[in-house]
Image (spheres, chains in turn red, orange, cyan, yellow):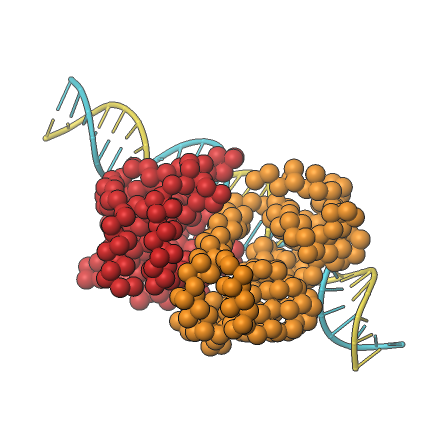
Length: 209
Length: 209
DNA sequence: CGAACAGTTGAAGACGATCAATCTGAGTGG
DNA sequence: CCACTCAGATTGATCGTCTTCAACTGTTCG
């Protein structure tokens, strides 16, 4: 992508400041915009008819979200942290992409890069036990400079236990128990609910999938 | 996509005939081509270190597969049925897409359309019981004209029970039992292992997710 | 004809969900 | 400053579902 592409993209974008609790859209809303995270964390979730909820993704800096199907959003998007996202009118963005093949190609790569990630998640959900799921979740967070400080080895989790549980498709209690197991094994240490000291080497050993 | 785009695409493609057992690529192979199914069914699967296997998708007519990550295929692709696929050299295809924005846009739409499907699968795998998973699988197959005959109401399954089980993330035995339950409820009738008579109305009722 | 494999069915055991109780920490008002 | 409150997190006990192991059936292929 050229700097000109980057500039053209920003020219049609609109900045939105977010803070914990900010709702960007809900499932069923008309899908007018596509979003790009600049900073902060956004939770993508889906409510099921029986009241259960699935967290489908956490979106960090550089991530795109808000692609509609049949003109409507299929999921909810809520901010978990202070930050800023850019939003683009769908039609305007589409026009820009058609006019700028290299920019469109960047979006195509982003979209295809999503697929293996989702596949990894499918494997995780269907084949592994709760502890392994939580380990995988922690590894995913640690790979994110935004919430893991490699110096102090402390991970800051912006999401609640139910968020983690609904992301991994397990019960909240199971997440607690899994963290308990990891703490007893000296792989993590809970400073408080949202701050974990992590022994990366051991954690990675656990995560050999 | 214009007819010219279509023609240009076919011009760089190479037809490959497939039959049950044909392997198109294995995980770890250099990712030289992208594939497009013309007819038949292709199973996309991933082998895990512990010997387990996850079936990630069945690809039918019009479906694309074979996008590599870091230059390598991450999954296996095997034909389950007679048919034909087109394959395109990755670099050649990329060049064509950059030259033809509307064609590239079609690929972008295809890629983004995959994401909600995968999300649906994640929800299915994590929240529902075995019977519901099998029902969802059957509904998915039925929505495919290629293997479901709406007149006779007979579904022809090209894949084996282990394939179905590994696709839904359950044990082979559980698939058998789920089919038994559905048969006892008169929702399906097993003509033979690969041919099911289906009461679509009742099946859809079961599938209210 | 026999062997190997796919599918089905039965019995036992393990894992995680659920329900219920307790604990912790942050914010509030006395 | 300290008790109080409320929500989120943790821990414990029970129960149900699905996996696992094993036996048996039916089919295909050398």
